[in-house]
Length: 498
Image 1: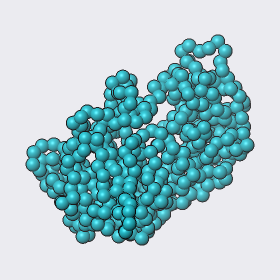
Image 2: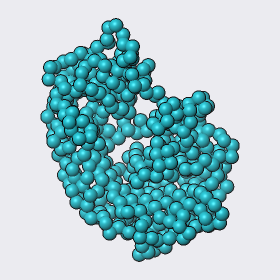
Image 3: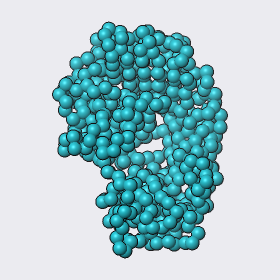
Image 4: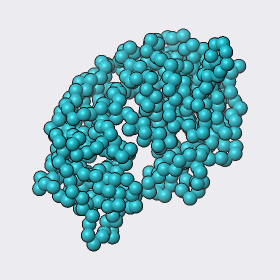
């Protein structure tokens, strides 16, 4: 087991908790008390906005049901908090079953043995052992304050989770116009905040994923090359011009003003920059982003390694730039996510060496009752690991478990307090590993929340590479984290069997 790179995460994930309090380490004389951490439990759900109280949190619009938003209630029953030894066994005397009505549980790190863990154990279903169990586990050295989702509504008081309300109420008729700067321009991309992207081929009535009454600027970038026949999505390249359109220039395409609020465009400082991946190929989920006026915008898409990048600084006061280069490893077919700062020069990107993953399986070769023995990567190349298993109990009910720990090719599974795990050949196993700075709370939070999809949670869609129990942040902390991550270098790889 690789433990040399795991450092205590003393920085709190800023903004994860709304009024939950931070970690504490006691005071007075003598040896300092072991730090404690607050875990706040909530249940995400979808409802019409008018049904959500004014002080209750709204995380986003519901993309599946028009007019609905994703909100949260306090969760205070239907789950337990388990302390585990390093071998995954439950320290029964420390199990917490009585959850306070405010949904907050204080976890005492002094009760966790070295190499041990703490788990959220959600129990869903019938009597006795006839339960589905969903577990979320964190190794001792990664402990921090967290807000955690539980999949079933479990709320005696029916109190909402209080916090900010964020929903944009996007309008399909929201458009902007710019002044054409070149006869060679073939496509205009619009980006509203949080990198919401739209666009089309002419400079008027450019669709924008924004509300009609916007409060933020719209980034428009103009491309000379456009392939409307390309496979999904259509491809546009060679970014030559850009501008930020003021929020008050967004108008209704079904009722346009008599004089369109057209905005002039600027030329980029440099184009034709290369992005060179080593050890992986780039796919069309990649892009370049920038931070402007405390928001994140997409500058340009990146389709593959033949896409050239553009950059400007003399006529744009962006706070930071970053490249998200995603794809597939050359060996072993690992999914690749990389984040890298961008400063207007060619980018050479590399990932650690990885290989065949197919022999990965659940077995009993470690000191735990069951463990995941992984193949295809070297733990010393990485700092953090997500281990996710979808298996069954001894009575063939669901047993899902996600573990965050140091990178390890023999990760012990945590025992449940109510059911027994049954090893079967069809167990689905997902391993995610990351090369990042463990002392950077933003990087760790990004990795821990990478597989939490709010829409999938409220849709009750247990898609592959998604967690149902796990860490969740309110929109402003997520935005601030995304801005900070533009300055960070991170490599995250993921693979699965079954």
